[in-house]
Image (cartoon, rainbow, N blue to C red; front, side):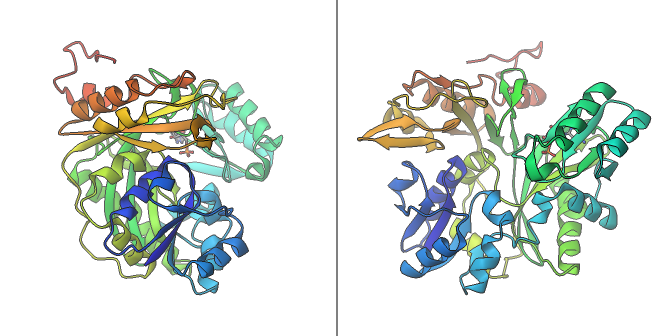
Amino acid sequence: MNVLLLGSGGREHAMALAIAKSPLLDTLFAAPGNPGIAAVATLLAVDPEDHAAVIAACRANAVGLVVVGPEAPLVGGIVDALEEAGITAFGPTKAAARLEGSKSFTKALCAARGIPTADFRCFETAVAARAYVSARGAPIVVKADGLASGKGVVVAATVDEAHDAIDRVFGGAFGAAGASVVIEDVLEGEEASFFALCDGHHAVAFASAQDHKRLEDGDRGPNTGGMGAYSPAPILDEAGEAAVMRAIIEPALAGMAEVGTPFKGVLFAGLMIAPDGPKLIEFNTRFGDPETQAMLPRLREDFLGLLLACAEGRMPPTRPRFAADAALTIVLAARGYPAAPKKGGAIEGLDAAGRGAIVTHAGTRLVEGQLVADGGRVLNITGLGATIAEARARAYAGAALVRWTDSVYRHDIGARALVARNTPSAHDDGAVDLV
Ligand code: AMP
């Protein structure tokens, strides 16, 4: 079968590598793709949010399945448009993508279905939101309601900080995402990401990961799209994953089916693992970036077969198999990211880096045969190993071989997992060797 993958990031490169291995695949197309994806797919100059252009590309290339990588086309209704045109797609409809696109919708579902999450209130005016925060006190979390690329959330330590955040949301800092605000209590615990494949009525656990949102070592600096990840998440053992399926994924799926908007695709639960069990921070309705770069190299099953089964509403009841190995991904970003990443610098050394690690492209471009940086997050280097420590050593060895003068990356990806599990590379005093 011919497959069209929508997107152009590191997540999509990892997905392309996994799809390319499938015995079901004839030709893989990607729109718009990137120079890394071009090694395994034919690139099409099509905007993933342009419904008519995507449908025309599917018809011209006899595409049997469209796989949607990023959230924006989902929230914009690309899957509805494809289904109307009779083209099978992996991903939720616009109505089902509200699980990511609207925090207030998800909170209402949590309340209706008893899904554990932080206590919350939604407000449509700054005056009411400010008054609630004054009464409730700090710390408290302020969230713009709609999609804000992970930048619409402030965990406020003081009431003043929360008031400022509310004013920014209603002042238009997040565009349409700021038409209303969700205020919620702070959850305590360790964060983890959990992914389940859903066919509208059934869900199976896929894999877990943990990511690093802040730009700098020690979880300092601004929030980013993600600076690294590892999989599996040591904090989620088998019993923990079963609890997430039972308490969070299955009730959400049942709730979506009941209101007539069944969820198909991958449901990504951002979790806080609290002492009394997992709690939902948020849902996303697509694979995570960079979590996917760390999860897919561990998959021991036909990824395309799984995506197709979800899209066609025939999810097998058994969980996909994964290697027991760990994988760890480092994001190489451009100096100045996230505010003003420096573009255009030449990148060399990827063949050498790719010998002991997996290199995926996120923001690169070819200019007259030379690979250059062309975005904020530019490359991902993923190491595999029997332990997180081993995977981490391979990933950092790979990153050290990349020759690109504007590169910045964190040196402590996975450090917390090593400390928490007291693996051999953690010192007795809890400090960890940084590379
Ligand atoms: P979200 O976009 O909702 O995932 O929030 C982004 C980040 O803000 C999360 O990954 C958490 O680190 C933090 N966060 C969001 N909500 C809460 C909460 N209720 N308690 C503590 N931290 C939170």
